[in-house]
Image 1 (tube, helix red, strand yellow):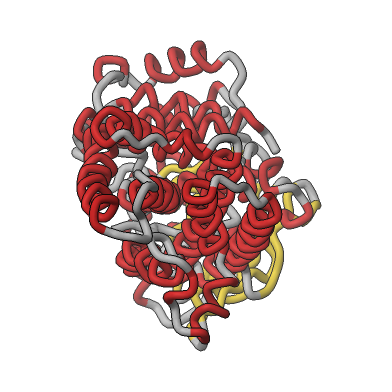
Image 2 (spheres, one colour):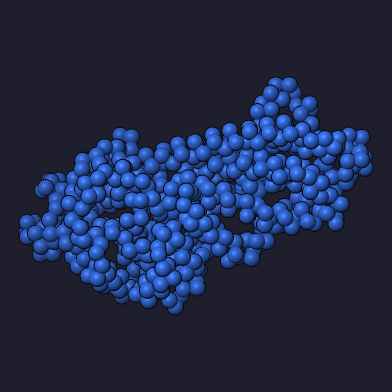
Length: 244
Length: 263
């Protein structure tokens, strides 16, 4: 397995945000992380990115504990995008991509910026300050930043939250296209079931810090006797049982 | 240390300054006002004080050096606060840059912000009040070094507080230097302080820096032991500041406050 999460736990005092979770991700697969608000998705992503120290358990990449890597060595293999995390507002789009390209040590940076800005259709507001952009434009810039280093592992936290259907669809289509052309492992936390169905190879369902079920989209729908993922999500979120 | 990454982070703050003329104006405005204010006070004391007679510019030079310290510390804090205000904190801390490189980038970039603000003010003081800090000669470089290290240390301690307590610690960033100023003996000799406070004050590099500055300007003597002492104390504080920063960083990771830290 490419990434393994073993017994991962995060306690904040008496509150357990993530409770002994275990899962594995194969290389070049897209895994959906689903669950109601406060179920521990962001904390799990935070631990994978080294922003949060686990209370227990370990994360391994290619059988090597993530803590044994040097911070800069491991983080250059990752990247992350979320609408809740912004880029410096007073810098232009071009400047932001340049700064992050340099921080990630991207070779032939100018070419890479050009490439990604055409792909994500952000060239027409390249010289505008990031803080002046609409939500849809900001999301595309944030996605451009998250792909600037061609990461092996991409963590996405609700990448299309609060976007209109058109832009949401543009981003989903782009991720789908990017996946087909590049070798990339994606962990996608989302509340958009359509997005998860479209992008993910399999799904991890979380609730109250625990994993309550795993499987492919079709498997989960069938197992719980529902007609779509949204209904399955509602059943799992409202149920008191664990199915995993 | 990867100097390309230090440069990249420095460039982020340079772009921020370059993109905004009001920001440049703000950097220059406050030191200039300070120089004007202390220039007139200095002129008055020079004409009316026995202690300062025939030593034109001692107070103004002290004001300039203190402002250098103040700007260095505030610049360090401001750059860190910018990341919080722009909600860029998570992006910064997941970038493949080591903590020591972040500290180095902030330290080197703070000097740039400090100089942008202070150089015009220092140049104004020459024709307007006939005072030039360059009169301190070669020791000026060492005094500035000691001040800079101490200013950055205060910046490190405040940013450690921001990491520990979040944006609510922001007010402390502004107040931090005023807290130490009375003990720094910036405008008066050490003997003015009560004996108990003198002991504490001697533990700060400021006393040695400003005592030495007065000694050079008023007695024309340079005591290099005093300069070495001030740099050594500053280095010790700087190391302490770096350790506190690391402790706060690891503490923040444990508490999970690095995620979504913002206004």
